Image (cartoon, rainbow, N blue to C red):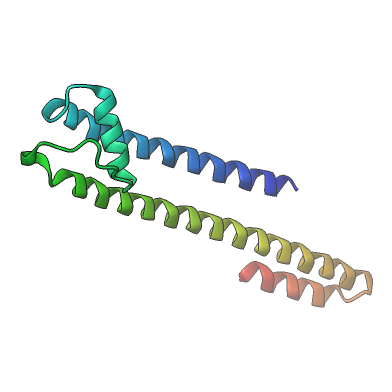
Amino acid sequence: MQSLWHTAVLMIRFTSVTILLHLLQILLWAAFYRLRCFRSWESCFYFSATSYSTVGYGDIVLPPVWRLLGPVEAIMGVLMCGISVSALFAIATRLIGNEAQLSADASDLSGIGKLRGRGSSRQARSQFGKKIAN
């Protein structure tokens, strides 16, 4: 049960850090828009967030000179979200695989203890050595 708790905490931490990094990227785009395109931070962050998330309402548009940056930010948002999801999936897969391996090893070691109880300690040591070698 404790291992499940640690796995959940790790997944929550990774997800939180990922969301913060996405927000940081949105803020970097907003800072550029503030320098070159819009007058208020609210408009910059709103436009950046809607572009990054590919919602793109269209109620705020970039000046004609910078108009291609909206789609570029949308592509970056899709790619970054895809990388985040794939990393989250890889971590979950690794954690689940490690948990399954630990459970299998624990059950194999309990089987070795039963063999020792029957007096075949040589066979038990042999199986234990194979497990360690693998």
